[in-house]
Image (cartoon, rainbow, N blue to C red; front, side, top):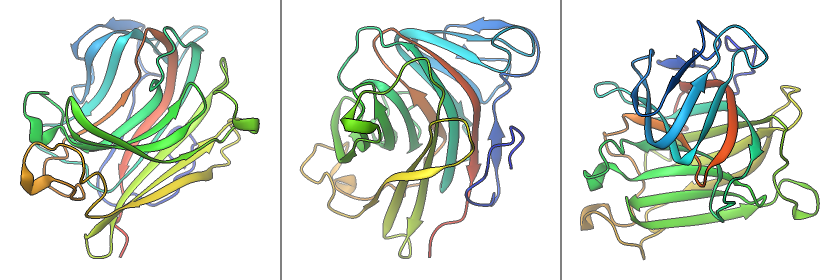
Length: 253
């Protein structure tokens, strides 16, 4: 178990970060570094951390047109990771087709103007109920989705006012020539994590998309700039987050 009593699917290899939404008094941010120097807020949004007291103790409320919740360190890097968090959506806002719950790994994306460091892998659960992986080849273009599944009955939409646990596993494999992506969900806070989706990236996926430079075109993401892991949504949705953690884990052989 981690410090939130959430099951670890894979053991921690080296580095671990956990959110402090359950510590201290209520505080709010709009952009920049929080009281935790690794937790940074970008995009456009309001982020209210409720701390240790009240109805929403241990939670963070997020609302805005394009909120971005970063865990960032300019020196240390995240490589093979297990990202875990719970999210409850109250209002989908503008209900943008690509919006929902998304975690992005193997990126820096800070600042967005350094295009070769904006590449990354995303694991998505859209408001319309689609679960899929996304590869961003360069900020502002070259996004490509793959392996769409529908985890809810009858291909239904993502339920509102319900905590949804999500784990995004990203690990290099086959001697660092490929990268395996996996999505697990816990839909009833039972700590029973079920794998709903997986995909192995290879040299060639999204090779038809633009990239920051030809050397990266269609390649798996294995360059040494993985300073960020971030969560995102879009369209003025109102969401709550809790039990957010990132752990570095072993690569697959």
